[in-house]
Structures are given as C-alpha cells and as structure tokens.
Length: 103
Image 1 (cartoon, rainbow, N blue to C red):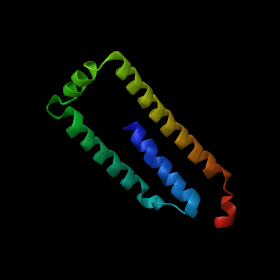
Image 2: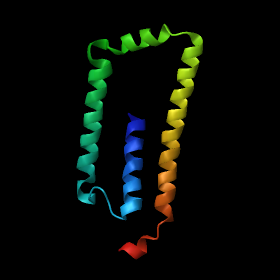
Image 3: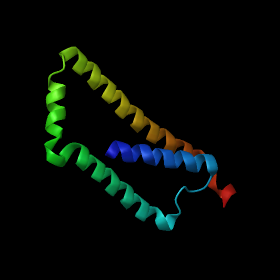
C-alpha cells in the first residue's frame, strides 16, 4: 500500500510541476488523503485478508520453480526501485521550479 501511495503522490507532484497549481486544494488535502487510504485499505482487505485468501497466493507462489521465482523477485524489486526513484525524481523536479513567479 505504501508503494501505491508513493506512486499517487508522485503523480500529484508531476501534475503540480506541469500545471504550476495544486491538484487538490490545501483545505481538502487531508480529506482526500484519508479517503484514498481507506479505499486502498478496503481493496487490500477484500483481495488478501477476507477469508484468508492470502494463503492461496502464498501456496501458488511456493509451487513455482526456483528460477521463475527468482525472476519474479527481480521484477518486483525493479518495480519497487522504479516507484521509489520516480518519487525522488518528482520531488527533484518540484524543487527546481521558482515558485515566486507563480504567486
């Protein structure tokens, strides 16, 4: 869920960098943030936790051959690094803007 929040945050930052304005006004940011977290949590609950569905996923992945499991692990780590790098890069772009010109 943290990766999803980081990805959404980086998209919000890209929007701000491109348009030079906030996607969500400051007075509604808290409400929207809480709503997004609740929705993501509900989705995660029904996909994984409800009726112990996570056990099915674990069993399915333990049946995979070792080589396929390593390739999958590598792909997951690359996705994690991409999302983290994307977030850092979006904040770097945000920092490069001279905001005094847009006030």
